[in-house]
Length: 289
Image 1 (cartoon, rainbow, N blue to C red):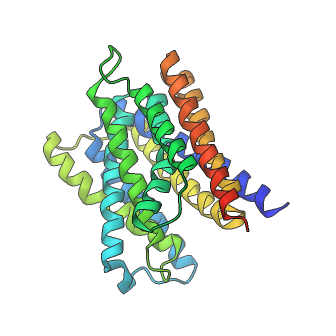
Image 2 (spheres, one colour; image 1 turned 90 degrees about the vertical axis):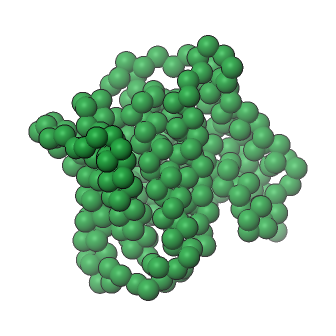
């Protein structure tokens, strides 16, 4: 199996895992558990699993680089992304929240140009603008289908894009497992603060406990698969398979929650995905000697 094929397969597995994780967390929220409590339990479970994986690799759980300004910035964006995207999937349709999230690579490319000085030509800037216009089609501001809760997914998108950019600048001495520990750990105090505002925790049902446990395991697997994918093949070949997450989310939204995305959601999703794929392919072409 070639590196590109292996990376593409693992990327598809990762996106399937993240879509299932979103579905499970949405079911827990629909069962009445406050989002703050979900973040605490999900973050704790993920932290413990990543800590076990880190120790199994013979790596230290703590490194002084964790307290660096870049890592603190990464943690801040991780909190922003996780908090608002979890709120988005709890209070809005899984399909539309996932569709908006697909614009993350476009925002990352724009951020890389503005922050790291990477060269982005007019074609990719045009594709970025078109992709963001696709997000507006999904949001439909000013039209009857628009709701303020839809902006939660936009805030989550900004958080995840900032996290991805900060990860690129994270100290190289930290492994992906070590980054996973503190990415999940950041959810715990965030969830605690939100839970205080929401009025306190509830006793989880057996079903909610099982679903949360599955979400943690699937989420950690998806994170690991994503790491394997990004280290196996060419980034420009593997990354477009991120968009399979939208397909999985649409299917799960219809089958599990009975969602019926409307025409504008499909049109906006197609615009975002096509703009993202073009941007990535153009990036590969520019990078070639």
